[in-house]
Length: 164
Ligand code: SLL
Image (tube, rainbow, N blue to C red; front, side, top):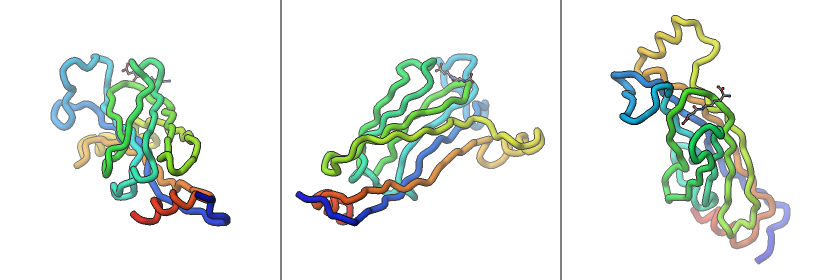
């Protein structure tokens, strides 16, 4: 099992957050959620158009704000599904996202940083009100496109990467 010299393979993916304000009609607060929580939100790593990425990514660790119970969360791959975590809260913070690759890759884990965005900054009050009442009910998406680069992959991993 040798590395294939002077070859690099790119695999696109999306990571980010989607946040939604609690609202009696569109996003009612479930029972048991603390009074000061204003939003539900989700952080994820997934394929473009929800394509599978679990053939190269086996685990994602999300490190949330320390004020959140159990703030280090591990999500293992489920084939064809995004790596995703749902929470509720009141504040924005930086999420540390650690990517763990399938063992065939022999790659070390890598870290990404993502700012959880709850609020639509840079908009007027009118625009915010409009968004809140619009079809998607004040959803704030902060999504990033990225490409994972595998440099000089092992032959066996190359097989996995290209036989999808
Ligand atoms: C701020 N620097 O002060 C940020 C910290 C922390 C957000 C935000 C707690 C949720 C929970 C939560 O939303 N923390 O207790 O489950 O704005």
